[in-house]
Length: 462
Ligand SMILES: Nc1ncnc2c1ncn2[C@@H]1O[C@H](COP(=O)(O)OP(=O)(O)OP(=O)(O)O)[C@@H](O)[C@H]1O
Ligand SMILES: [Mg+2]
Image (tube, rainbow, N blue to C red; front, side):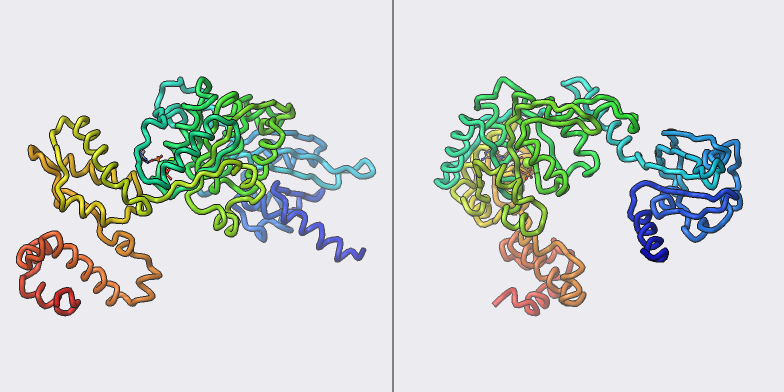
């Protein structure tokens, strides 16, 4: 191989490495300084490369630089350093410096730096997670309100079939994959499967993957082991904690792709290995996973591994959105009314026909959770009346259309976009005021004539 080619290849190796590398020759000139090191030290490659070390790092000398000391044959291994970089971010590295000796002479010195900032944060987080007493707030994130099948409300035929399937799942030990839009009751069903199932006397733990940065998840799931270089302590992960019980992997598609592969291996082999550990620990955990987009589309987008999907969906459960089971809307509304009456000491006895109509018309992008919020808000609004009427219901008409996105604005042009919003608001004001133009105008804070003019413009009236 030509020297030029060899040089190119070594350069690429250094460029792609995760560890920072800094090499100086016998006279202290930097001959290798890679991207990772530049990033760690917040330096520009060109300001360091081929320059004399002491000219660049003016505050360093033989007394405080391990690299310079290595030129004197003094090696330093695995030194933990925590410092603030120029951006004020705290960085923790493990540094080692070695002399390079040829024919008994020092020809240079090498420094290798591993950035363990993330690992360190991870172990701190896990420490926090596991050092809190079971009843504290932190722990409640993992051990939440207990739901049973008896808490699930519904009469829709398709929905009841889904619940039947979930009840069968409770009698088995197979993995369950629950798909449903946000607020459809995935957690409710997952918990019911556990609490009314064969593992109910063991723990139920839940971890939402959208809530945590990917770098922390592995340690949280599998625990960490006292490592040679990480400085991490032995800590138990969720898999070990849930041993014998059930682990809910919520929004599994938010789990980093690589970690999905590791999870699959764990599920196939029934043992885990802590991060940084060497011991295989047998585990017996029932897995329930959730997704809020169809599996096919997640797989296509590369957010869900196909092999993991097959492993998880031994029992697939698809909870239909509320708009596809409209016969549940009023039943749920009545139950929620009863619940919030009690919670707030109110005596609202009926839902008016107009309110029912309004509830039935809406399509609930936030599903059951949104319906409950609507009822809850209405209850808090009503003072001493006994009827929940339609004007107590704050339903965002055309909610989704009203969330502006820059692309939409760009597509329509700002003027057209504003007109669209204006027209929606007018629509809403008119229906809230039963078509009374004076009242609607007052609510919109404009003159009656102006509203009339705008109604004509937008063809809102005949
Ligand atoms: N069929 C139902 N009967 C009674 N309450 C329900 C039902 N479905 C959902 N809920 C209630 O709606 C709320 C949302 O349910 P849950 O948290 O299980 O939804 P989710 O599908 O996990 O939502 P997300 O995807 O946003 O996490 C909860 O308060 C739950 O009790
Ligand atoms: Mg949920």
